[in-house]
Length: 311
Image (cartoon, rainbow, N blue to C red; front, top):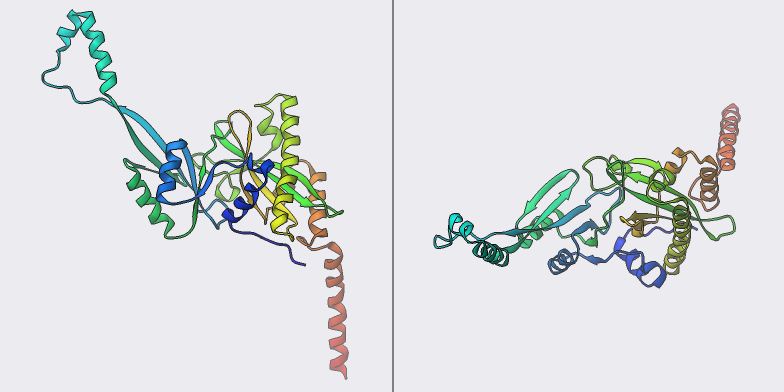
């Protein structure tokens, strides 16, 4: 029986939101349209816009809402600086009037890759996004300000697999550090790997680190169990986890074809051997026995051909 894969981010999000336990970890996520863009930019300073189908962080964009205060132009009939200085009460009154009369100006910063663009109105931002979206389904998700390692944002990948008893088991956690100037941490986008301990221990005490580790291991299982209710042939998932500035974990998205080999680059080789063992058992990786039997069969086939020719 083949391993089930689910490519739609929106489909997976809807399924996960049905679980009260898992839904607490999901940032506000909606299908993109003009009205939703307006609402999300009002609610959150950062928002990520990403394609419903896509891998390696391709097509991901970030919108930052920027608020500034604009002072109205000075009137010809206003008090001169000298007049105000002569009377302290007038100076205080003028300062209060200026503060009251200033108004908030909202603009938007759009970033994709390392490129940044600025738009003074929501309509212009929406038009620029539409040109990049080109009619495809995109999602808009509440942005989580990520913890940083050496001034670079990072996130985590939690791997959960079916074990040899056909039960869900979280088998590994690794960290991914964004390349300078990038908004994504994917290795294919220039990010680099790091251990969970290396990235998290500087931010949390030992007890907090162990608590988070246990929480992520449980979350991996809860997420897999919930997805399997709708997709019964799942065997493995990779969960992209953001840690906000308080260390709280958030589910950014779930991948049903998670990368495995990156775990082999980490120091814990025993964990990687277990990951491979499970992947072989449920058919993600070929077994060594099959490889050996195929190699052994080749000489026999060539031998039979020789006999056939001899006849």
